Image (cartoon, rainbow, N blue to C red):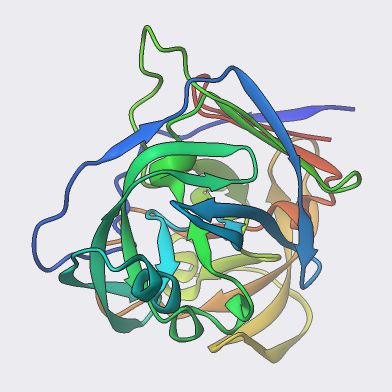
Length: 285
């Protein structure tokens, strides 16, 4: 059975806060539909092989929770291209970075003639990036019409935009609405995440008397400290269910623009998902 959910209104979420200017340089290939295999890292990360310029044999994470594409500092050093300073806010930490405009980039089914990317030490960005050379974010992914991930077959497909219309404008978040005990909440679909995470202050603001089942437990997700709870009355599509969610603090820096948390696709128990950027819809089965 295929389930789908319509996107909430587009929300400008700046997970990346830039000090200094950046170029809007992104030219994605207009080839119709491309499919490539991927590796499943840590049982949830979509990792594809690719290249930047003449550097081949690189690995990239396809991450819809990242608003910008990132390449590791070691790769940038080998490219020997000019850089400009900036910073990112990764949840609750500011991390200094640099901008770099690169030429041809290939990452699995993604092709870009040129792109403006962030340069960072990926081990500072996340411990899940060990052995990875870059992260492909929504600045490239949302230039296409559709992104499909088949977790069962380990195949990812990307339908690029038609040359004539240039495709949808690049999005900085892919947001879906859910209901928690009758209260509407907006979550970012994050392929770089396995779980459902909610900002606890936003949850309690909307639901001062929020109901949980069983005992809550302290948890650590990467570098984040969270509280694991069983939350009844969660409705995405279909009947309400009891969902296991992780409650986290809001970041001290950065405007969330009404975002209440993050939805990892595998929390839907999906074997395949499709992010339809042109139709503003998430589908899974």
